[in-house]
Length: 195
Image 1 (cartoon, rainbow, N blue to C red):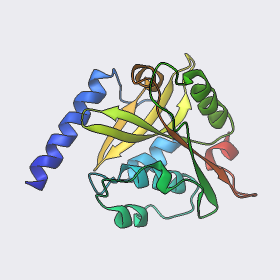
Image 2 (cartoon, one colour; image 1 turned 60 degrees about the vertical axis):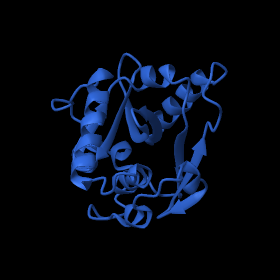
Image 3 (cartoon, rainbow, N blue to C red; image 1 turned 135 degrees about the vertical axis):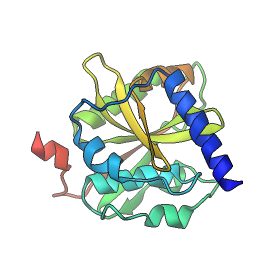
Image 4 (spheres, rainbow, N blue to C red; image 1 turned 30 degrees about the vertical axis):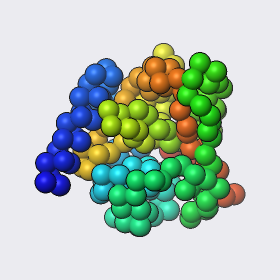
């Protein structure tokens, strides 16, 4: 029964991705995708929040690629949110929940997008909550395309999810929450130092 349910969830997310005009990114050079996303797994159906946090920690080489402690502790927690990691320091990174506001016509979408752009320009990734058929799923925004869109990655089990229309999805849902982070002095992103 669990395998059937998990397969159904993968099918739903896959249809969501194709419906949202997402594309694969096989030909793009992307260190975050190549080194982190390809080697990461979401090990529980409901562990997408700690999974995204683990991807950020792996990006900074603060934990090994076989590190799944956050997901193992969380497992299939159904009442969790970004607040579980708000102001939490893990391995020299302090995470912060942002834009905890009603998702309606008054949501400051331009401010949200500017915050994401600023984080990306500073070499940091942004964790974002995006709608899915059965609720919400967490992605990591890793870059902005020349046309201004955000590219986001996630995992669902071993399946990689790639979105190239993150802004469009956020606009359709009248906003969303994000999680940013700050690093301890001396801790630099591998990608930022390589650029």
